Image 1 (cartoon, rainbow, N blue to C red):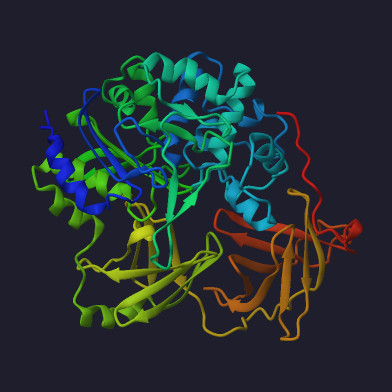
Image 2 (cartoon, rainbow, N blue to C red; image 1 turned 90 degrees about the vertical axis):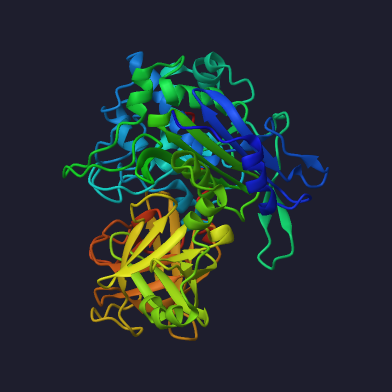
Length: 561
């Protein structure tokens, strides 16, 4: 049995990381389903000077995913859902042209476009989104980013569809089902899926975002009511019962626990580290499971070590620390007997390569890179000697520094991101997983590619979203792109890693599509293929004129689920 550290051990480790009057962090260490040690620091509410305790509730964001998967596994045991059946059998309104299984939805291998990306593309607010609005957004989607089962691409859509499936087969929403079948039986009285943000949650911490200028924190509110991909609210104390289930299958059954930890196999036989809402990691030679979550000023991470039947949870209501690093440090200290601080320093990459080495290596990473499978770009520049600024497509710049192992890593709110170049390929990683999030090739220099494609002007329609786009010429000879309700984006000519002509517009990559034939103008008229992180080659066919009333998009109808 792995020895459990004491409360003073964790408190002494956590204290220096959090100011007394700042948003904070809670850490729990569990053995055999019992909270063996915990420590908290900071404020649940800065405005009201309310301290964080082990009973403070936090939104755990994407850590919720393996809880959603557990609900689906219970339905499978009751023979109400078949994980390897086409999800269209439960949700026939989906317009997908290819079968997608429930299991593929839960393992990010379905090829489903992420609904956050669809919102960003069309300018449809994520804020306040409900299950009904989500449903309207995704039911018209016909195409996949890749053949189902052929690859891995993290997508929130599959888990939100799992929640809709629970409603269809049980007649109750995921929040009610989880209350009755999971949280209630486990005795997790302070845990719920928050599908109605107007309901008061006792002892709920507020979320805070660190200001980019270093001037403290800004309050952030959760307004979204889509569940499944996130939205569980829980406490360090309540999670003890959940850790008990993971450790020994308590209450819900070892069959469900074992199915939860079954790693997915791709259609080509590749075995992924990802199971159902959890990812396999190496903890200093000890097999373990991990997941993290980030949303609206909350960050969370869990690590389970099956061999020692121990686990760690880290919950935060601030975004400038990375709970996965804290959880890994605690878990590694448990397994290795090493000191907590040294484990933390090692995993978060505080050790930097010598400045002269970083300056010499900066050129390996600086420049523009293109990811062919996702058709997106990232840009890297040297912000100061030996320090790089990385801008992933559509995001803000993040400072990264070179570690002694040759990997460039982010810090603060960008902690968890890693960048390394080998054999001319830039591998982008996230979190504790060894799986790269993307493999980027150097983009060719210059604004013009070999295809000689010209930017088509006029109006275009994506029938899957029911959203129009327009490209207008500007005085600079390039153009402006308008899609749906999104702000106008300036189009800049660029060249991809294959030397082909594309245009970049904010977080989008735009290509001319000569095979569109999807618009009212008929086949043969060039259309557009638009990509962003989470949605690949969304097709817009040319239409002859602006939509009625010169609106760029129709109003979304809310269909009954």
